[in-house]
Image (cartoon, rainbow, N blue to C red):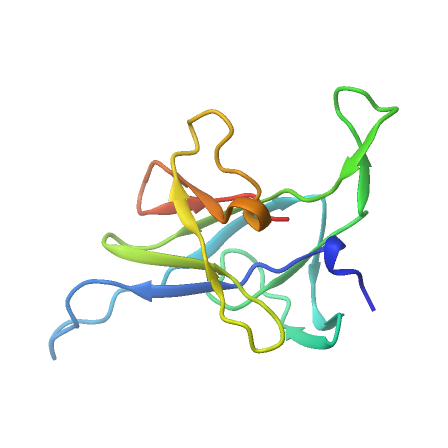
Length: 154
């Protein structure tokens, strides 16, 4: 059993916006998870957090499959002062999709509770985005080949 404070789940709910394809058009490719930066590991197979068990395939990146990630160790030395410890709670996700793709990021909750939508904020403003758990914010980086979303998770 793992402590919820040391676990980060990257669950992406994605919705492709725009006009439905006509008979002679192929649908656009789905949004995908391009990159994950964190101190920890990808979770492959069953994963227990509290009363819930999740199962993840170990997809390589980029992927359109659901993936799980664990922040480990729970505490890390500070980069500015190695004698101090801080919680390991930062994850940066890079998500992309074709033009006009809407990406909906939510915190998935246990026990039948409704998911919590995340608010998009400018990551270039001071202190933005805040910690997802406390502020429900996700930074929106400037698009390159398609929309990109970036956020920190706790």
